[in-house]
Picture (cartoon, rainbow, N blue to C red):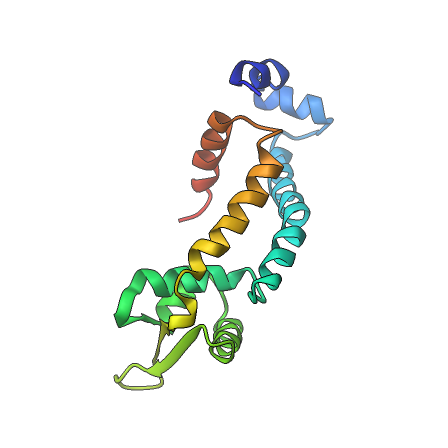
Length: 167
């Protein structure tokens, strides 16, 4: 699909035109429509991704983000608190995921040596190359779902807009 085809099919709308198109009494409802559309997209694509990941031994999609963060931190590892802040995950949930990943042989969790109960997470040898294999699953499934519907240029435009929604 070319950009010209999608622009002809879905030209940009003003807020008033968008509200009228969807029958919304208030153009602000467009924000709600974005939120729920993103949730539907995620629910549509994730079951197939999760199935492929489970076949690889990855029990939850967040494991990819944990592996990526630990890999980025290198041999020094990443502190659990930093990981919690990076992933926007509650401490108890992150701790459960890390415990499962330790049992699966993908991570090591060690005391950080400082005061308190701080812990550092590091990848094990079994996790080497896992990030790339997981990424390939995501890339294949996401591109297969999106490519027939939006152009590459539209994808970059959309991600730039969505990136403004979080810090």
